[in-house]
Length: 305
Image (tube, rainbow, N blue to C red):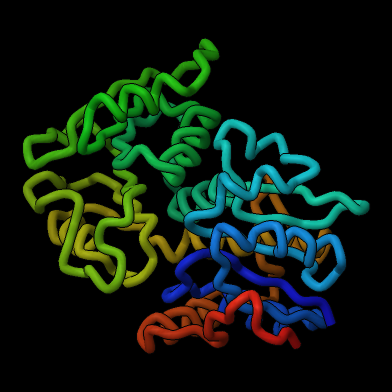
């Protein structure tokens, strides 16, 4: 049996063990997945576990996505513009880092039939998740992207860190506050943690800033229907829960660890035709409702199965 894990600190709301153990069982894979709470000082131990075969692959969440780069032998090309990885696989004895945020966002928007090319997008946040989103939006030809954050100077620095590649996308920075006019934008992406459980009574935009016909994607997946999405729906907008992106990210990880197990199109893992996505969602939603996952976080020093 092979063992996979998600590492981060803390790991009190991860759905990854629920997701992957369900898929491993459904696909007949002799593998298990666990949550492994890991402090920054323990990253080297995790890297060694991968090289020794104790772990066959990992996902990485906060705060280690950039810090783990130093332990890799190779970084996949799609992860280079993001400057962070959240999936590591072994390839011919090398540790290879990937960023599945790109595949996850593409999966969610494709599933909602939202055409990125030529669109006007409001991106909320200027952190790692926003960096992945901006990379995807530029690659797929968004016409205009406005990045909004609490500090305009930080947003301008964020935008300036991207290369000027002569693409079709125009970029601008705005202040994220109650005065922000979102009317020009067809797609709004929340790449901040605002609204994440247990602070579920918070939203990054007020109701009057959301409009009929807009598509709103919230990267927060716990809870499924964040206050932001509730407000968008009440205003006549179309919503894309973060759970859709989470599923796309998980499928992309599975494709890196088990090449050929999942069919894929344009780099996005798709569940085989006989697999019901609705069944997977039911399992994930049940875990969210229980505020728990199939595997509780373990300390790195704990006995391993």
